[in-house]
Image 1 (cartoon, rainbow, N blue to C red):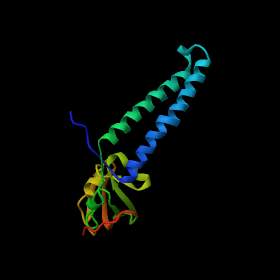
Image 2 (cartoon, one colour):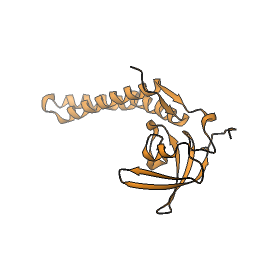
Image 3 (tube, rainbow, N blue to C red):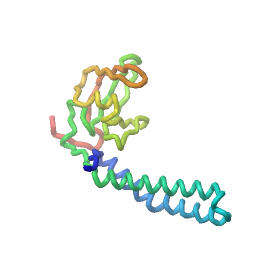
Image 4 (cartoon, one colour):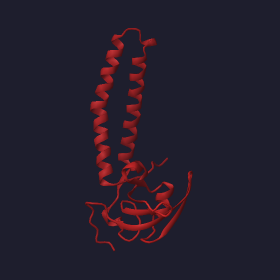
Length: 167
């Protein structure tokens, strides 16, 4: 079975490398210390500290495996693929909620980098997928679990640090 390809920004790629290094070193060492201390409490069969540390170790190992899989199958979003005229993966979009008038800027990223509260919107989310390929001035209606949302695309730009000659 073919592995899923993950599209990442350079920043997202660097963040995953940093998280992987942190989990393999600092987090693993912290968990090992917790396990050692828990064993010193005696009988591990009814030792909640040992059980919690063991679960933390498993969670950490699962996340390490996930990150390694993502990195192994990662494709970095090429700067030349980021459009200044259409919403695209790796591009910045300024949206206005047509109901409230609120404006919010988002970087369109792959699902692995999504963090709506920090302005990173997945291209696989309902709003992100509806925006892909649209142009400045267009209104996009999106059916979400919380109801119908309507956004106007106010601006499309390259994120800071990305330079693109593509029109």
